[in-house]
Length: 425
Image 1 (cartoon, rainbow, N blue to C red):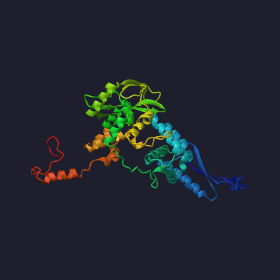
Image 2 (cartoon, rainbow, N blue to C red):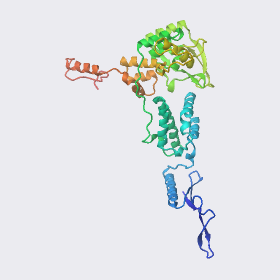
Image 3 (cartoon, rainbow, N blue to C red):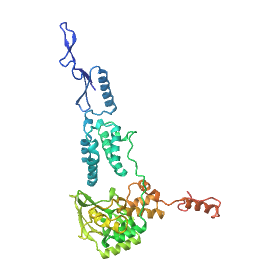
Image 4 (cartoon, rainbow, N blue to C red):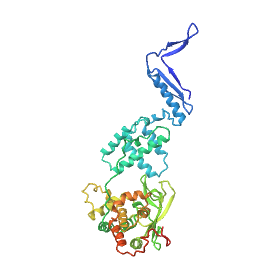
C-alpha cells in the first residue's frame, strides 16, 4: 500500500537559490491540517484528516490500514457508514427463507428495532448501545422468548456485516452483552379432563382436531392441512407432509415447520375418531397455492374444513371457535361485551402438543423418538422444553439394584447389560 500524508498548511516550493522551502498555504491555521491517503484493495483512494500536532496519529492510521490489508482483515472505513436500518433492509431482501418468516422479521424490525437503533451507522455501534437497546425491550414488557427472537435477528444482521467486511466485530457477541434470558417458567400440560372438556365444547365438525392434536402431536396448521390419503389406517401411521399457513393475508399450503416431513404413530383411539369423523363429514378437495400466494396450485382432500367448505382460517378458528370452547370448558373467563377474550397464549391449540408430549414421556418414550414425532429439528430443544415432565427415575433405580442384591438369579458373572445378538458388549 502506497500511503501518503499531505500537510494542508504548508507546501514546498523552490526558492531563489534553487533549494526547496516550506511556505504557508492559503489554508494555514484553519481546518484539519493533515490528510492521510492510501489506495484500497479495490483501487479506490481512501483518506482521513487529522488536526494540527497529530501527524503521528495519521502515520499510525496508515500503518494500521497497511497491516489490515496484509492480514486480509481490511475494512473499508466508508463501508461502516451505512446505517443499521439501510443495511438490515438489504440483508432481509437477500434472505432465502419462506415469505412468512421474512414478513415476521420485517415486522420485528419496524416495531422493535429500527425506531431505537436503525439510525446509527454500523461502524458506530458499541456494546453499550446493544445493552441499552436490550433494556428497552425488557421495559416494553415483551415475553422473554420474543425478546430472544428479536435479539437473534439483530445479531444475525451484525454477523452478516462482519462477513461482508462492513465491521470488524459483532457487538451482540461482546462479553458484556447478555442475550435475553430463556423463559424459566415450566410449561404445565393440560390434565386429561381439560382436554376432554374442550373437545366436548367444540362444534361437532371440529371436535376431532383435539384427537389429532392430543393423540398425534400435530401442530394447528398441520391438522388443518391433513389430507385423508396421508392417514395410513392399516399401517397405523400419519404422514405429516403439509401445513396451512397465512402468508400476507392469503392462505397457502406449505411444508411442515422447518421443512421436516415426518411419520407419526396413529393410535387406535385416534384412528377410530378419524374414521367416525370421515363418515360424518367426508373430506373435500381444496386447492391452494404452494408456499406463496403466487405459488403453483396444489390440491388436497382435507379432513377438516370450514362450514363454507373452505380451508380453515386459523384467525377465525382461534377467535370464533377455539376461545368460546375454552370459555365453555371453564379454561378462561367469558369476555365482557365489546371486549376481547383474555390473553391465553398458553391455552392455544399448542397445548394439545404439550399434552401429547407429557403422555408419551410418562409412558417412558425416549426423547429422541418424541422429538421426531413432534417434528423438532433438535432433540436438545425437546429435552429442554419437556425435561421437567420426565418421570422420576429414583424408584426405578432402587428396584433395579434391589433385584440384583435380593437373589435376582446370580450367574456368577455379574449383571449383563447392553446385550445384542446374544453377546455381552
